[in-house]
Length: 188
Image (cartoon, rainbow, N blue to C red):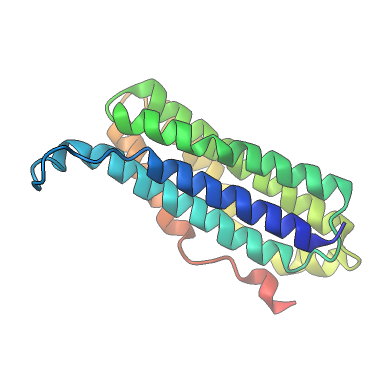
C-alpha cells in the first residue's frame, strides 16, 4: 500500500483525538477568571495530553519518511498505535476530573506506556521492511528517550498509588524530554 494513505489516515485519527479532547473542556457559566480555577486540573490534563499527541504525530511523521511502502505488518502496527492513542482522551478526562485519584492517574500512565510500546513495534516493523534496514537501524541508533520513557511510565504508574502528584510530574517530565523532535531519520 502507498504510505500516503497510511499517513492521511493516521493524521485524520490524530486530529480526531485532539478534537475529542478539546470538546471535553467545559465552558464555565460565570464570565470571571475565578470560574476558570476549578477547571485547571482538566485544562492541565488536556495540555499534557495535547503535547503527547503532538509528539507522537511529529515522530510518526519523521518515522514514515523512511517507509517507502506500507506492508500489512506496518499497517497493523500503525493501527495498534492509533488504538492506544485513541484512548488518551478518555484517560485525560478521567484523570482531569479526578486529579488526586490513584486509579485514573495510573491508567493514564498505562495508556502512555502502551502507546510507547506500540510506537516501538511500529518502528521495528518499518525498519524490518525497509530495503536498507541496517542503515535505518543505524540511523535510529541508541534510542535513549525511547528506552527510558517506558521505565518512567512504569514508575509513575506505581507511584500513582502513593502520590498522584508525583506521577503527574513524571508524565510532564517525560513529555518535556520528548519536546525536541526525533530527527535521527532525517539524516538518511
